[in-house]
Image (tube, rainbow, N blue to C red; front, side, top):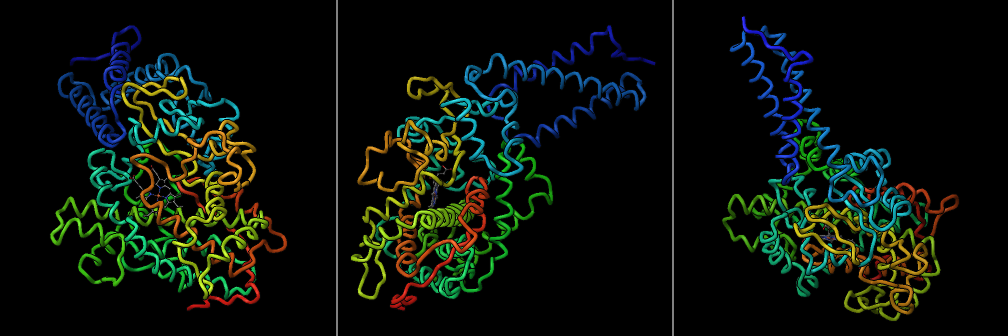
Length: 554
Ligand code: HEM
């Protein structure tokens, strides 16, 4: 019988370690691998079984001994790959000269490990900035840059940075938001931009106004008693976007209940709070049952879109999806359908969570700084129509109103931290510092908004810095809560219209403040960074103002 030995003194362990090192240096160190986690596991399992089978077949080794031998060889190979990875990341990696926590230099899981319990990546990022400065290596391949001038370099129109691997989490579903193919994105962007023309926006205004009325009515029903405002802003935003995407809302404002599909989405989004590397996320998504809720929400959106295409949810007013549907004609191809489905979900996810979170933070700021409610009333009263309602066209240039929105988004931006880009192969320069190519970089708005380099008295809520005190903004380039450049928020005009109209309506109809025993800290201390904000309870009183009726016109 042939025998095979991996006992000390034989060459096997060294050969296996060498192969492991070779695998790292010749293969893993190059290109992107985040899409292949499952495939690599399959190949490794196949190789393991094949090698063990070959040992029994050609060397006459018993099965237990073959399995033991194969495990040992695999172990040595793994040791080689891991040692090589470790040495490379610590000693030779292009980001090695940037400061950062030791663990983060070794693995991107360091960051996940520090934020997964409380989903507080925004607080952790601020803490890291305070400790390490402008450039912080937050993962083996990841650099956080807290410099206002980094924003145009990384995100601006001329930027050569592209969307990073994070956007592949849903692949092969690729929407305008998640597509990494620059050409494809560009062509989707052209189609989408028709849905946000001035004319289209005017068409949406009536729809939005009717949801504003419904929101105001619901708040009136509390008669000034404490209410979880974040919940109602959430219902409002999802209803508006459901209507604009599918021609039908989620019925949350009228029922006062969260729609089950929205509930699923909220739960599914919590996985984003873990800030996992993409390859792990994709492997989790591939495990049957583990991300079931996420897929059920996606299927719900698919069904709503199918119904709309069949004309079963025909709406009289223009909506966003109608514009996207017009582009594909009456016989959409399979690829068209995949894109439309991804886009329909993008409308809900990108348009609802963001608006709800921004409204909640705005009203948290207003309740905490009631003097600004008075200033807003002074500014807006002359702009109201005779029946006390507001037209967007008349309030869109109101200085203080816009300043309240800007200042809130400076301090409480959504997404607060990681909008990740990949640097071009030749690298980039940020204020004279070279960032090597093919690295992941992010410029957290939450932290830049608190940076002394960009703002005077950065921690204070001073809306006037956006119009009458411009000297308080030291470097405007860093302010991009809607992002900027080719991937900047295409829904910005719609979002601003909603925000302006809801603020104007609410401060006109209600006195807004905290009930006894509340100061807003329960909200701001508990919001979660899960790409967008996971909202906490925001307990406010909306006391109807004397002499102002709910929906006087309606
Ligand atoms: C206050 C509300 C909003 C804020 C703060 C906001 C912010 C942002 C930001 C920062 C991005 C860039 C994200 C990234 O690069 O990964 C973005 C992208 C996007 N937003 Fe918004 N957004 C808001 C509302 C909306 C609304 C109402 C819509 C309407 C559907 C919308 C649709 C989109 C889309 C489609 C993208 C992807 C654009 C692209 O990649 O070309 N957003 N938004």
